Image (cartoon, rainbow, N blue to C red; front, side, top):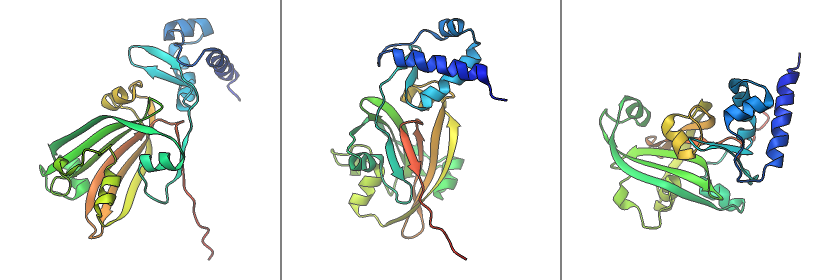
Length: 238
């Protein structure tokens, strides 16, 4: 049986969001739950659908804000491209914020993903991708230090490790990615200005060079609603 009370709640929320100018804050969660006569847990569940569409944005400690619709970054997954390249092809402008480049030692998980010894020296690059000032993705690349050193980066480096490696002429061959939906951990939630536990689209990828070695292990987190990834598959005839 259809959940008509929940559908009515979503319809009421949709009407409220449409009436609220972009940039304005919605009533607080307790006030909104009281106004709509639902529990806070039910309210959060209903609001999540609007957040994944990019219609509202929850900010830790500040409240929930209505945002104007933004263009969706639409791309196939058959060819590996940086977000900057995707956006440029679609005529969108993205910027990079919170760029952090640091040395670290390989823990057991990363050592296994990169095929390097435990405690091997690595370089980690983390940054936030913004479209029209809004955080839409959080990216983290980890590479062996002897393959990627921070001092090799030019002053024009804007955050795309893939583009840097391609421009350097590295013989990259293939990327293998595991794609899943995950809840935002505290660090990623802060970077994307969302709530801890909010659902994100997650890519865990390994980038291979021509000799078969993994040269980059990356973790990418995308806010649903701002991206439309798709795969084109050939029909195999027996």
